[in-house]
Length: 115
Image (cartoon, rainbow, N blue to C red; front, side, top):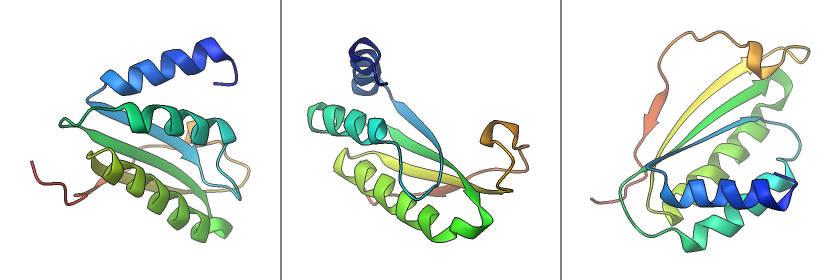
């Protein structure tokens, strides 16, 4: 999303989507582009039903970062009046998140938004 055209397309998609999926590999810092993208669409999103789904790959030694990542994305969902669902996966440091096998359903989380 470092290019303006890509960022604009991603913002437009988030504004119209019923489900927004964010897939990240928890690290010391989330990518700056992710924060920029969220900061652009979040105040412009009209209230309507939907969900924010967070898929978080977590190296075993960074479990605390996964909690911060989850809390941040949960707060984004709450502000956007979206339901929040998350799924964490512990990954060896040398394994890429794309190579993670699917071993079960995600854990739903209700953000408490009344519909």
